[in-house]
Image (cartoon, rainbow, N blue to C red; front, side, top):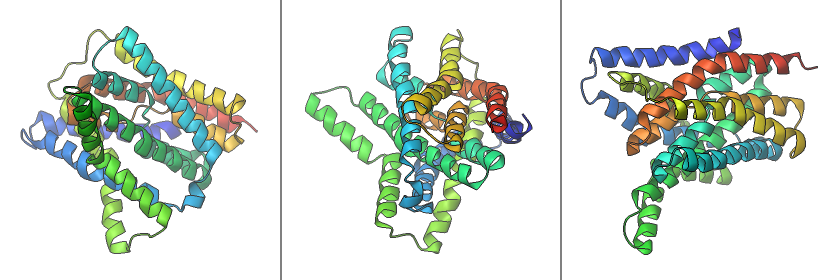
Length: 313
C-alpha cells in the first residue's frame, strides 16, 4: 500500500492546492479558464508529441500488449456507452464523457511512476505504451464524439463538414498527428525545440489536477450518487477484470506484460477527462466526482493487485 500511497497522495495534494487557491480567489475569476485552456491547447498536445517521439517505433511495437490494452478499453467503452444509454439517457456528448471516464486512466501521473517503482524500467516502458493508448486513442476518440455532439444540427452534409472541421482543428488530434508523423519518419526534433515541448507536456497532469481543485470551490457533488458509483465500478473493477480475461484467454501475455496491463487498467480515472469536458461544458461535476472516488478506492484495490502480482513467482 505504501507504493500506491506514494503516488496517490500527491494527486490529492495538488487537487487540494487548487481548491485552496480557488477558495481564496488568488487567481481571480478567470484563473480556472486560463489553466484549463493551457492544458487543452498547449500541454496535452505537447504531451502527445513528447510521448510519441521519446521512444523509437521499434521500442513501442509490443503488439500483444497494445492489443490487450486497447481491446480492454474499447470493450469497456462500448459497454459503458450502451449501459449509459439505457440507465442514464442523455445527449451524445454526455454519454461519451460518461464512457470516457470509465476507461481513461491516470496513467501518466500515477501509472508510470508506480510501474517503475514496482517492476523497473521495462515495466515503465510498457506503462508509457498504455499512456500512449490513453492519450492519443481515447482522448482523440472523446474529442471526435464531442465534435459530433456539437454539430448535430443541420443537413447530413453540413454535419459531416462541421465534425471534420472540429476534429482536424482539435489540438488533441493535431498533437497526435504531428507526434505520429515525427515518430514514423524518425525525423526527430532538435533539443531547443524538443525540450520546451517536453517541459510543457509534463505540466498536463499536474495542471489538470490543479484545475479540478479550482473547479470544486462552491460546488456540490451530484445527487443521486448512482451514476458516479456505476462509472467508478466500471473503472476500478470491471476494466481490470476484462483486461485480465483478454490477456489470459484471447491474447496471451508474459507475466510482466500481464501485470502491467491489469494494474494500469485498475488505476483511477485520469483528470484529463475533466479538461475535455470543461472545454465542451459537459459532465463536469460528475467527472470530478469519479476522479476523486476512483483515486480513493484505488489506494486499496491497486495495493491488493500489486501485492498479488509481486508475490507471483
